[in-house]
Length: 211
Image (cartoon, rainbow, N blue to C red):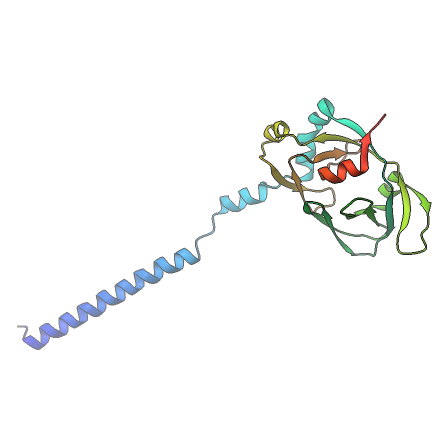
């Protein structure tokens, strides 16, 4: 038979159990909010939201054929031999475009634009696209551009057909992320073996329609 003291002890024990239960529930909710379980599908979507170089080239090829125009790069450039493993950040008038790390034999090109953006070009591509005018005696020498590209403007209509709104990212030919925005030009060499972006302002500062 329970006496008064036993009843008090049972009540106190019950309160402790209830308290511990509530504390356990609190920490369970708290830590599940701070450290939510990772959703594999979300990770997969995040990775797939950046188009690979091959996928973007495949998407753009029909548009190059239908509405692409041939453009000549007329503006002179400055260039120097790159240091092996040198990292270059290409910054245009509207911000960071991409990054690239130089390999042995590569060149660093600096455009004669308002942004004076720099980028890396492989040795093989460099000698196809530029001709030496004069050695400056300093860090950079001046070259005449002789390269041509097929270009398409990123209009709202084209963005819609590509499945994008105003801005997206894709993998550049050198394996790094590259941003593209409404009004930019998506270009490819005449052989259409790669695709990359030229920011709108810099495009009109350096390219003109082939006559």
